[in-house]
Length: 277
View (cartoon, rainbow, N blue to C red):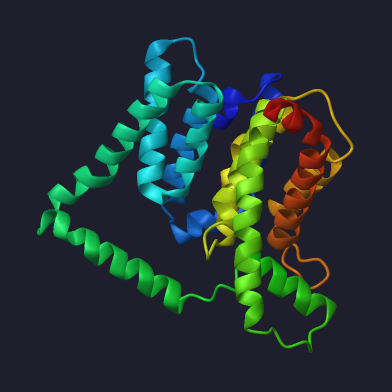
């Protein structure tokens, strides 16, 4: 319903587009896994399309939505920098308070209360230790699978793990900073959603649904640049399950999105230097 509401165009176009998104391979995979990321995505959608709303009620609900999304998946907290870019410092503070409440308050409903926080951290550590970080769309997974495609016999050195981690951190910083000089709102979202995926050590393919607001903004935008062709191709590939070149589509899609964003960052470098001066 939110996708249908925020898309521009006639009702037939909006219905068809919304249906394609919710019936896509990546969405069906997420539904099959019953991952709570779907709930977080609903709150992210509402936040991104309403955090700058002139209606105070919608705006406050948007701040609460960001808080709930961040309490569910943590990484959506990155989207809070949009409030800082708009110099909405009071709103950012309220959203942080909402986030702390949304994160800690549910512990009171469980036996042991806040003592369960240590148990949650322990389970998170177990997940990172047992789940292979060569799968999904994290930076390490992308680098490893591209390496395997180019040269399957090449042995992945242990030193590469640290190198890829450093690259993911540097890219996260670059994208968050450069988001401030992006001209279009959906481009800002693109630059902030990418760090939500590449910064964590493990990001499964269903994390691509974080790009749904970006896709909606992209489709609503009538002007195009050359690198937008890569973004369109990434959305086409990422939302279906067909495999090309022995590399999963979702990994090709994520790589294209990162590459297109880097092109946009280079093109806006002059604006960033001007901002610093």
